[in-house]
Length: 462
Image (cartoon, rainbow, N blue to C red; front, side, top):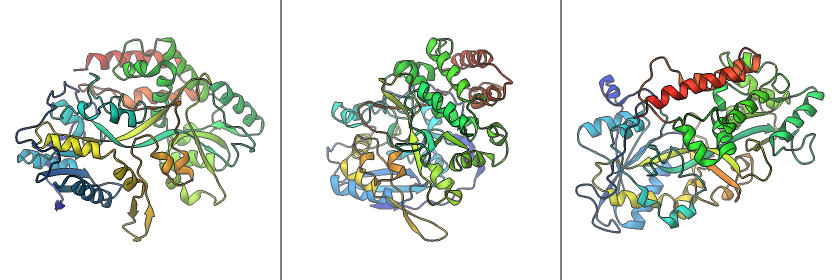
């Protein structure tokens, strides 16, 4: 394996070439699903050099070196590995110079908008044929169906979800759980009944760090209310999203959730104060509120103020009916192939390899080292295949991955559009939740605002 050395780029011009607004356009995708010029002629890839460019983030560099070495052993090819914490800048320069990698690991939703720009420029290859029936059967249900894998909504896969983290309602398991003061609810009716019980005990049912934390909650609720087709239509601004019975049910339920009957009294004030989100999270730890929307990162984020005898718990967003499947919003990390890559066939083999038992086990055993203290700690990464999360060691991280035949992974984000002057997408969708909670806005006003936003976004789709 050859490790390509990357120097830090400081040229502002290189940053600006590929940087876009988070509301960048979403044009049609490339139809190139075969080999590029000079593509691999060998099924095994023996003798070829595969250029892999990966973002070096919280997972560390070691995991990529191990995966690359394992792929070399599996195929006989050579992997040239390029790692950088500023990969968007590095690749901007590389691509300008005609040095196009075969594989890129860089996620949607980054500040640079690099992956979104590549999609807009039709510079990402169609990799639908990677996910044959055998591989699809191995993947988590629903993981390939959202816009995080099918960014154009055309049924074709351009982005491979290689790692995932689930979200849900995190709660105080010292108080909530079997044999505790409160039972874990399954449905919204049970959830709000628990709220009345907690209120009688001087506790609040719910808080939230900031209104933006409702993104995963609302995604999951839309899928739960109307199913995956309804959800995917909502992501692409279907005109009936919020006026439908399903959409209105989501809005009404969120409003009840943040009403004075259920919300911790200081939530909105803290959510809009610098650093106040941690005070709201601490309210759950202290037992002043029972539930909040969050992800597994909250464990480390609040470690310094969490008592040693405290227990975290996590559950999916409640269902409207107990016999429904459980929709769980899932953040994924994506890998993709540039349309102009020289080794597209071999790159597709690498993507398939990312779902192998070899890589699953390497990722679960991942460790990272604290740059300041040198302390090594477990940092498992979970590949979105069935059974991977079950291999995690017992503990809160394992419990945050909800598995089973009735669990459907929900992925994707609101579809990107051409820039819309004056529109703050997140502020328009989630910002009103603060106003709903303190009584400054009604659900009907929120619904009307969302209908207007969806109309503007639909008009700006390309």
